[in-house]
Image (cartoon, rainbow, N blue to C red):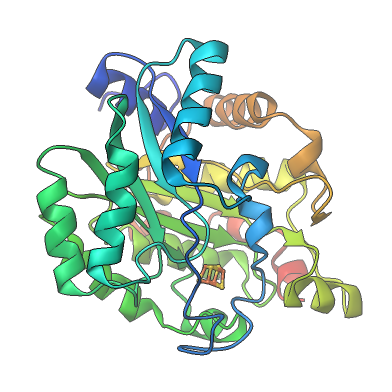
Length: 327
Ligand code: SF4
């Protein structure tokens, strides 16, 4: 097996090889809301969700999409000499509108000649077949990615964080979206207070069976103005410290499907909103990534090393800190 220099399958390298140069993502705020907040599925949203924490400053203000695209491209072109961009429809549920409205919004971004594709973040229960048919059609001409929140494969966790859907709903949505030329990305969170490390590995095995192209691995972080922050204040629970996360994400990578390209290796949030863990803001992305790559090398570990090998599950690393994570 060919082990890449990073020791995992990197999304950045994939883009570079596919397009022959760097491709940047531009966050777009198209003004959607979310059925888990407006009462359609539930009220209040997921317990960890503060939209501002995953929406960059530049995408928070409601300005026309074309202007958001132009402003971001002008900035990135000047700073990185970038020449190809993906419009990333990020905050809230970006398929939560009638098809005609979605077409109008996405196509405003796609009009720009330097936009080569779109990435759409949404919920698995917000994907009618007519929307998938439309994305399939767009994918003939553009690089189209659909990003769904998996968060956990444990239905009890999904209930506790008020996701409003179970894991089967996510798995079905990915299966319906597969084989259409649309790239599929999953987003998973490790460290929910009710889950121990063995449980988190079970999530890794379950999501490794999904038809994904890309995956974002996030450690749980607590951000202000959320139900999770209230719970954390009332009864603090452990969150991954830096060294723990570096070691744990290496373990996750070993069990993960080797074909998935890794788009993120940790989560972060704006300084002013982050409650814990603080290292997510204090360390630079380069520091975190270097530490993970260094650890993988030291352990002679690589993505997919234990994939499909049930007997390799539960080495000491899984058991370590089990008590702590059991609360
Ligand atoms: S589905 Fe997404 S936008 Fe909606 S409440 Fe949950 S995290 Fe927030």
